[in-house]
Amino acid sequence: MMKKVPIRNLTFSRLQNYLEQKEQKPFRFRQLCNWLYKKYCVDFEEMTTISKKFRSELAEDFLPLSIFVEKRLQEEGAEKYLFRTLDGHSFESVVIYDQQRTTLCISSQIGCPLKCAFCRTGEVPFQRNLTQAEILEQYVLIHRQLLPERQITNLVFMCMGEPLLNYKNLVRALKIMLAEEGFCISGRRITVSTVGIVPALRKLGEEQLGIQPAISLNAPFNSLRSKLMPVNEKYPLHQVIRAARQFPLAPRRRLTFEYVLLGGTNDSLAHADKLVKLVKPTRAKVNLIPLNDYPGCPFTPPSPEAVEEFEKYLRDHHVSTFVRKSKGQGVYAACGQLTARYLEKK
Ligand code: SAH
Image 1: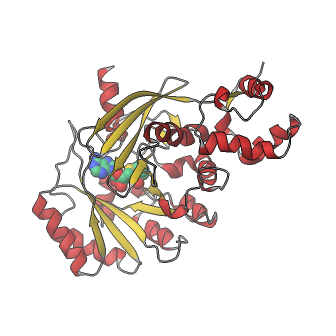
Image 2: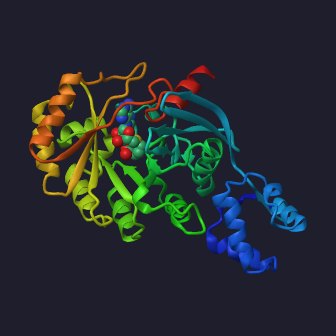
Image 3: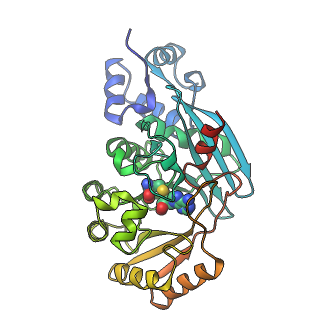
């Protein structure tokens, strides 16, 4: 017997081929996509417009889900979900909301091989890439919990992992997220955050998907960036910025650079000045993220004065700058923090 595949692992063309083999009428494709991607179905029996006979055939051939909610932590303005995969790994997603927006922060890998010095995901041993289905199901399962009170408005790949190291599954999942028969999310509302894996960033640009990239700079000097992010040895600052600048953006959109502020490490005005020089030639905005501290973290958060001065320096030099408010401290909302704590206790 063939091993059952999670149904959301199929590309649209493979799903269409399957339906043709099963001699289903052409409308079946839209109908099935509607259950999978608009009604967030997690059981073939929920698909009431599909005949009982075909529902049981689907259940024989496919799995409706391949991840399960293991834990849900809630606090004011943020929620964290810990998921478990079929092969027994844990990973997480975070939802952050205010009046206007509900942002889902999803994972692309279990653990991360890049080991940035300030990031807790680096402490979680890297296991593997998430599959297309595991990426899509984070959105499905969380949307099921949030609806009807809340609708996810923005999607960011900023949780565990480096999305561009999981290129194939990332792009396949993005295509379904964007498609009319899929989640039908505007590319303007999807951000892929990356350290800047240069060849993959170029390739992603060539796909012309209309999504937004965010580039994690975190330091304006190569020597410091290499210490904080060992991947900088392979893809140094100037290469990353050049590739980012060539990324096709939606009209009137700016490129986003992220900069984690670490107290006494990269938060001086000399760092701010060099950062201005690096990003100024680009129509860009800078998101400053004060370090989200965790037990055993080798860095300290910046002082509120340092954050304010750094922000002011960038703004005074006409770089649009935002300080990302730290939400979800209680649910350990910085990358990998819940999983790391969870693994500690096991
Ligand atoms: N690998 C991708 C996406 C995951 S990290 C990337 O690096 O962009 C998403 C963002 O969170 C990155 O900008 C990263 O620098 C930042 N980040 C990681 N650990 C953090 C921490 N402890 N506090 C604040 N921001 C952190």
